[in-house]
Image 1 (cartoon, rainbow, N blue to C red):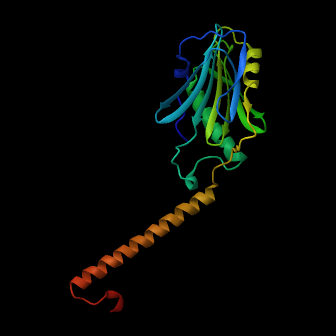
Image 2 (image 1 turned 135 degrees about the horizontal axis):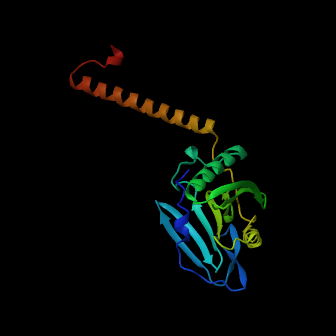
Length: 226
């Protein structure tokens, strides 16, 4: 999996005020969510990884929707680390959780499997030193992208607002979406073995050819017919 993006540099943006009105916005063809009339959208690259973001800030909280490519675009399908079944999906999610736990400056309190339009994701809740809720995240791997939604508030953590924001996230099931685009280990091992076997045959053929050329120049009989 591609290196996970540092999270809290994401909250270093300028303050945006949110009015009472909101609207549904298409983040991309797969995901939509409710946003205020004033929000900020950006495309950046961090450590070679493409990041697409929507973010906004009120007087009491920050919110970010983020889309990150899960692995290199030029990664061969036969060697892909993308999940190929439910178990491998959870394994990859656990790696995401471990990285997020390391980078978020709060204590991870709960991890909960969640479903949205039939797709599996995770909800994470964090708290500060006083055991007060401060941060919540939810993420889903859809096709080759990891979609993550962040809510943070040090002073006015509102569970109802969090629920409203996360529930506004919709997955467009009219699109072709899969969480299992990878190949199982047996397929990857077979691909590697077949590739090395083919390369070995090529190398042997080149060596034999070079020996034949060398012996011919020397005026010697082809060693294969001696």
